Every structure is written in structure tokens, then in C-alpha cells.
Length: 259
Image 1 (cartoon, rainbow, N blue to C red):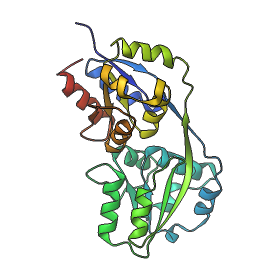
Image 2: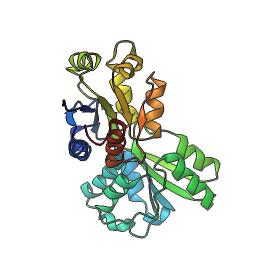
Image 3: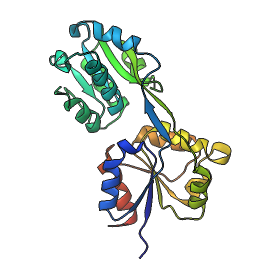
Image 4: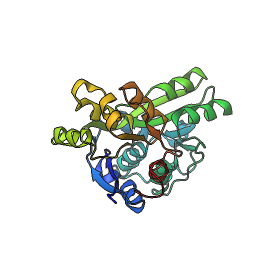
């Protein structure tokens, strides 16, 4: 029986775990990164935050592994030991982000059961945050719902850019789309809204309607699923847990026990 195929659209260096999980489920894996991660246009805002004493902030909030990686990497570039934030309250949107934080020796204070910025915001607001100040290291495409929610609850959120998300070189996109329309790709997996948007940009008309009619679209979480739907995709799967393993298991269950 022909093996089913899955197309992974996140940067290759961040796709190895998902690729392994899918191969373990019996799928043939293809990589076609639609985005790339780069340093921010300027480190000035991050450096100003790092120059303040850790106690200046009541907590650090990380909504992506890239945000954690960029912030901790900048500390190390400046010769700052991440341990200086060892007594800080640190909040992570999900386990992958927490794992990135933990690799520096820092301990995460809280991860919401539902791995989303909304769930994290709800927890913080429920804890009472009026008058508190939070640092939010994030990318250039960071959404404002979380800082807005915290601001409405009386907190001050300092959002700083620690990485940029940009469209990757889409050479070969036309041939890839032809394969999808011929039914040769069984699943297109997305791990971020920006990956969805970049992929749709290579589709004639910018809509995912025809793509979702010819293949199964899978999203790692509700925010990514929202972007799929916004851009015309229908019938998409969403991972039960917003992790590589969760996404792989959701895809596997959709197609049966194996690819």
C-alpha cells in the first residue's frame, strides 16, 4: 500500500521532531519551509529591558519557543547569565516554549492546560495583576490580544521584539502546488499562522479553498487554525495538544493507525 505523505511547512531546523513523529506513524515526510526566523531589526528595546534589574518586572511571558530562544540568546551574547532571572515568575504558553526556557536552567512558573495565549491571559487576569509589570519577548508578527487583555486588567506589558518572521524563498512552490492538486500530498501541516499566510501567498488568488479541497490541512493549534479558515481553508484538523507529538497523533488518528 502506498505510504501517505505529509508536507511540513515550518523552518527545517524546527521541524525535526515533527518529522520524526510523522515517520514513526508511517508517513513519508517532505519539507517545504514557508517562513524563516531572523534576528530583529534592532536589539535596542531588548537591551534596555536587559539593562534593568530583574525585579523591575513582576513576570516574564513567553508565547513561543522562538521568543524564548531569542531573548535568552541575546542575554548570552551580552555575557549575561540567564540565572539572573532565577527568582522571576516565568510564564510559558506551552511545553515546547517551556522546554526552550528550561534548557537555559530557568524554571517555568506556569503553563496553561490549553496551550494558547488566550488561556495564559485568562490565568494571569484571574490571578489579579493590576499594577504589575510584565516583559513579553516576541516576534515582529506578535498578536496584541494578550498584552491588550492584560492591559485592560490593569497591568503594564512591555512587548519587545527578539526575532523576525519573514517569508522564506518560495522557489519550487508552483511545482509543489501541482503535486497537491494532483492528490500526491495527503497532508499539509502548519505550525504557525505566519506559515499559513506565507503558504497562501504562493497560491493563485491567495486562498486555501482549492488546496483544502485536494488535501488535508492540519494545524498545530487554534490560532493557526483560525488563520487557515481566514484564508479560505475548510475541514482542517487541529492538534489535540499544541505540540509536534500532538499534531502527529491527530494526523495519525485521522488516517487510521498508520500512514
